[in-house]
Amino acid sequence: MASDSISLEKYLYQLPEERIAKHPLANRDDSKLLLYQDGQIHHKKFKNVTNLVPKDSLLFLNNTKVIAARLFFKKETGAQIEVFLTEPILPHSEFQKALKAKKMCVWKCMIGNLKKWKDKNILSLRLNDCTQIKAKLIDRKNNLVEFSWDTDQEFLEIVEAAGHVPLPPYLNREEEAEDKDRYQTVFSEKEGAVAAPTAGLHFTQEILSELKAKGVQQDHVTLHVSAGTFRPIKDANFKDHDMHNERIIVHRKNIENILQAKGHIIPVGTTALRTLESLYWYGAKLTKDSNTSFKIEKQDPYKVQYQNISLTAAMESILTKMDKEQLIELRGETEIFIYPGYKFRVASGLFTNFHMPASTLILLVAAFVGEDWVKIYNEALENDYRFLSYGDTSLLLSQDENFQSS
Image (tube, rainbow, N blue to C red):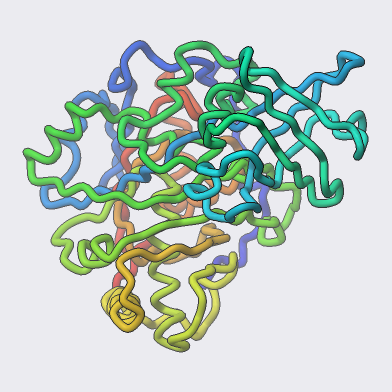
């Protein structure tokens, strides 16, 4: 069960502005790596990570791909309206299908300078001599925007031509040429994220090949990271936080690999971890109701009726469901909220960068390593680690009391 210690103040720390990495390093694998194992901290280089991942481990990588989600329109008055794509509505709610739309589509957006955008005012943005995209606010309350264009291009092509990289707000800078490549993992594949799974930014194809040669298995899941990942917790009682919803895609092979894993299961990043743990809870819910939908509410992991279901039983219940419905892929949604007191069912290791104070991600790290999160962050600050999205990273290997696979 979750801890009764729910005060957010406990998860604050002082992060000097100069410790926030504003730009990526010259090479992805030049970053530092803090290894936390058996309660001990070791300072390493990421380029030597192959020697640090335990043999027979299974890595899960989030293959989501960041889209150029920030679109800037100008009114005739000169006022700038920023339209930030967050969720597709029409012609399809699935990212991959929505990004293939032609001529017209509707998205839920975050809108900067909304007060200056009147309902009947159609904004336009010219991409070149042939292409112009128009934006119409069709639902002010829900921030729904209709986009239209005359060419036969897919919406993804329009976005890539007109949009800007959705850098995290705490970088406090405009995008630069390097961001288009570096704010993307080398294994990104499925467009739909508006923020990168940043623990994966350190990996190169060479390192992935070295890990494979060592016998470290690699698998891919998809969680389309939403802008909600940056939403600050405003409630002193953090359990009241309105957790963001994110879409996930998993395959039959993912489940089979979990069942066959011989060593550590290590998600690369908190998004891959949220996907794996959400998958367990979906399986746990299926053991109680075979018709339950793949939607994990933020408090599902803390409900008594799901606490004693083994990882094997949960995964097998999903395979049974997939067999019955002849599925090779599952699409779901998760609001999973992981905070101290949570018992991890799938992940026994984690690659993760260093996160903002009093954030949902600090709570997740504290759940994984317990009170040692303070020691880890103090060590990182004292040893000049770079923080947040473009910063250094860590490999955390769990202690038994925070992990429950049976």
